[in-house]
Length: 95
Image (cartoon, rainbow, N blue to C red):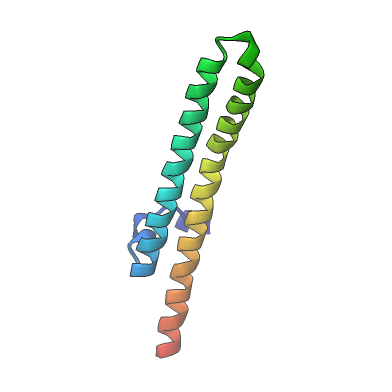
């Protein structure tokens, strides 16, 4: 199965696979922005001793967002792969 993941043809297989890919790209980009925002604001908050606790939490949240990115990518690829399996099964059922 692993050799079938991350192939360009999986995302171009059907209208549904293109929509799924686009949806995950939007989510992935939103997570990127959230992580960047957390790190940027956390960096500024770290300049003051009074706001360092909040800054630390923003760094933790930003780190979790960065950790979510490969998870999102793997979920997307598995779902795209499974969509291909369903297309193959549907074609076999027709014949």
